[in-house]
Every structure is written in C-alpha cells, then in structure tokens.
Amino acid sequence: MAGLFGSMAPGALTGWPGVGSVGRDLLEANPEAAYARLMGQMGLDFGPDANTGFGTYARGQSGEARNRYLAELSTHQNPDQFNYVDFLDQFGGQLHPSFRMQSAQQQGQRYPGGVQRLRYVGF
Image 1 (tube, rainbow, N blue to C red):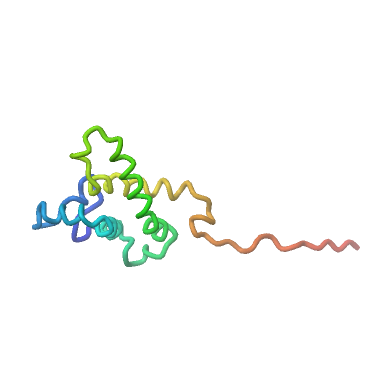
Image 2: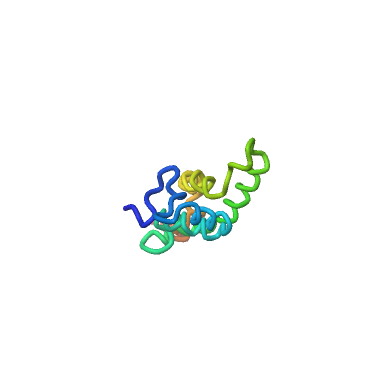
C-alpha cells in the first residue's frame, strides 16, 4: 500500500507532494526526520509491523545509517551531489537482507528455554 509519500521505489523518498525542494532541504537539515520518514514509508512507524523483530531492528539502525552515510560521503567522487536523502533510498533496501543475516535470537524470535532433562527409567 502506498502511503502519502508514495512507494519505496528508488527516488521515492525525495518527493514531497506539492512542496518541491523545500521539503528536500528540510530532510537534509534534519536527518532524524528523514529516517523517520523512511520508517513511515516502510510501514514501520505505526501499525502491525511496527513492533515486529524487523520493525524494532530497522528503527534502531538510524545511527548506523548516519555513520555509513558519513563514511561514504568522505570517499565519494562528487560529495556536493551526494546527499542523505538519496543515501536513505539505498539504505532502506539493504535493511531486509541485513536483518535476515542475523540469528533467530537477534531477530527477536523466542523459543522455549531449551530441551528439558530427560530421565530414563529402565525396567
């Protein structure tokens, strides 16, 4: 379901309907707002997916996103044309694969506390 700001297609994060470059400048100046907007587009801010293991993981990756952006910005060929909003378009697509690489426990899946001790009674 596409929300107010569209789908998660490449470049979808950059378009604020009817606002133009002012909205983009606002997102660039407020990285927390840009990340919150990404979470909203992915359906992870409110709703049934917000409290899943993936929702918790994705919301917790805002610091990692900022650190990766700064690292990539320092080595980018043309840093004047590389911005955080465009980076988040790429980063959002990498969240599912990185989450799936975690163990079941890291993903928030809970299993019963191991195997009970078995007793063997011989007759």
